[in-house]
Length: 576
Image (cartoon, rainbow, N blue to C red; front, side):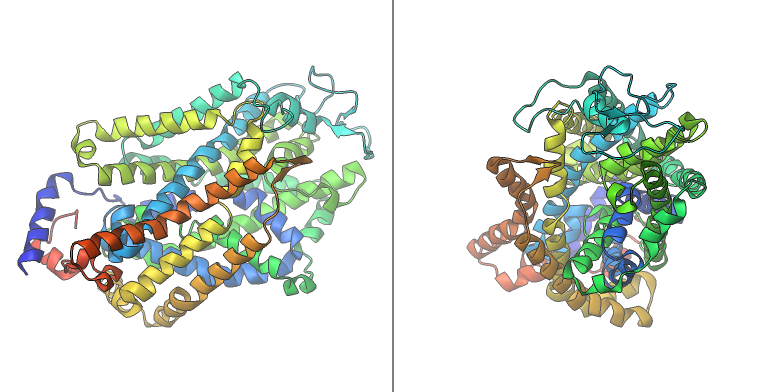
């Protein structure tokens, strides 16, 4: 008991640096919804739905949302709320798996390098949306080739092998200035570099004062995309050919469900979209009151995410249907995902509308707000990890402001490498390997094993009951998911993705072997922290004479103060 008293005394000394809390219970919901509802809802989910059986894709998507994404968010939120400590400290629950926190930190860091690049592109499009005529609607610009086909309201156009749309040429030759390959770096695009710096300055202004300030910002950035998206949706449904696009989106092809890749796509999309297992929600949950109702919040987050994805699909395929009608082709010929949808297909179709500048401004504002709140919540998580683990920085009067400024500057410098003429090749490689793919799935599986098996499900459920009371209906659901469904599913799909891995390509460009190896290294680095730290702490414990089995659930083999003991020692201490 002396050891526990000593730990409690250490905690009491930290009262002058009590962990901040959300001022309102809904602050957490807005921040988490702002993080989870992002660009993937608008440009990835609709395409996956179309590609994988239309309405039939919703069956595996909803099942995985119920049995993996929702339990995953509940696990993340309750873990952060349970300890009210940082991302790394939360994994003291199972010290041998503390490398999960390090892996999640690296994943968030990687996402924070490539995600702002998309926002910089969107800023450029937003600025150019005020021009008349729109630069992606005509072929009279200096970057256009003789094969350019302008979009106008006179008559439909026909596709040929040599024709290139004006929007495609604007994207490739004016925005990206695409070089011949990843080794042809070229010059930095000064306008894009300036827009990237603006993005990071705004990111700093949203987060430099901590969650009390960022909570105010997120009320705007998390809510504004929804009315903007609604306006775009209504206008899209009024376009000629919209019904044809919606048929491609919604009509189910049940035969697709026999293809394992459909289920793999549904699982990975629902995880990536909700952010389960990334660690951001653990950090956000650590700012909750210990009695906060995370059950309600988790349902709200998953529900809003699914609703946004579904509504976004209507807007996207109504637009693609109109585009296919205008080009005298089929929807499957124009359907695309990722930047090609946001920066080619949508601007192309919006340029046909009356007062196209207004609709383009609204669309790119939607893109910016969807991406901005997702990114600055990640930024808050990164700086919280730094402050939680660097006492001298945390105790400095301007420690948060300076560390946030340094972090934003370093990430901005990393992003400048993707602002060159060959930067898009690096962006595609980085975004395909560093966050998405099998590495995230592996970490989700490790999360479940650490909590449900090493720490013990029954023991963790007792902790949950002390926070929110008994939830008998949820117990069996969470037990099946955390112990069996989620880890097994994630491991199987991770192995599947590794097995079907193909050499990376960008359009018709084949990456060299060294770039492919670099991509695999990006995927492996976060994962290596899990076994790497387990080996390190095992050797350290063995040399100090400790028992290795005690690493499964107790830090260094020493008993930790229980939640009751900590609350009794300082019942009014917010840090607890």
